[in-house]
Length: 429
Figure 1 (tube, rainbow, N blue to C red):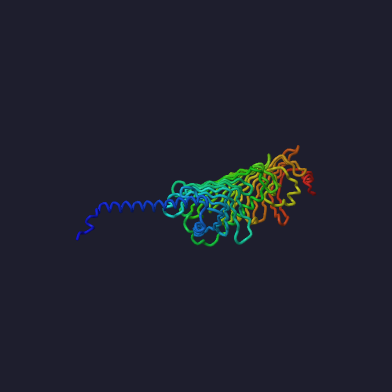
Figure 2: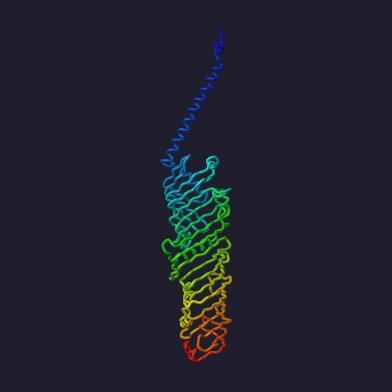
């Protein structure tokens, strides 16, 4: 009996089998690719399905961020676009709430291959940032009209560019975030809360709300450098320029300066405040948040009433009675002291003025050195040149004043018509 398998041409059978398998594979691949394209188009037009949005929320939650979205559209070859986004994160007792009309992001190929987030670009439009305290009633910053973008920089870093409006000031922020991979890692357990950040933001907001700015006249620009692996390591360098500033009920012509911020110090340098044609202030102020201390060097020309008004302090009666309104030149050094305890402030002051009248007494020139410490004003030396037809009328001496007790001690000498000068000062002998 003949074997029927002997007449089969095995090479043709193998070829046809291989060809058929390839056709089936191509058909299956086409179906898969077509389904993927259709799903991609659906996600781009209609948005991600509910289960995919839940996955996004879960990934954000793993990193300590709560997220809500009205819609997320995404595609393999296009950007991810999220509408009506709300992101909430807690840090050091502060709740940061970011609301965005439209968030647009593009992921790099690294993200598609490794399932690790890697932003190629990020753009925020129509955003606002609100800071609130979780456990106490505090006035913290609100930034509106916020626009921001994020771009890769050299190495493992991002370049940031942000514009917004903060308490009447046009804000622009640029800089870099180093070790950016840490942005996508799950957040570790938070250490014990540090209230210094909350207190600093509250102080800044309160200071800005005491001011009134002309429309479009106030600007603040800053450059930041921050490490995503350790947010406590940062550096900020910036400047501000403000015109027509209403400061404690007083209209200033200009206020400008530079500042640097680090975890250890906040420094305001080259501060220049022009109050009017005759009054101005120049100086430097250093704050240490860790120790809650500050020190300063200030010089300028100003009237006594202006100084007390800027310091939010009432003039003592004995100062007001003299009616001294003429500006005087001064230089003051405030030694390191707690910023919230004026009783411990230590100030050294030199002052001079000329060509004015103290009540009815004409003064050609006045010079003095003073020290304010332990609730006491010590004037170790003063010189008082009286303007008169007589030559050489001059009074020199020293004084000590205890403002709270309303007492003073005076030691002086000189050549003058004491009866006439006392009557001009309103002092009865």
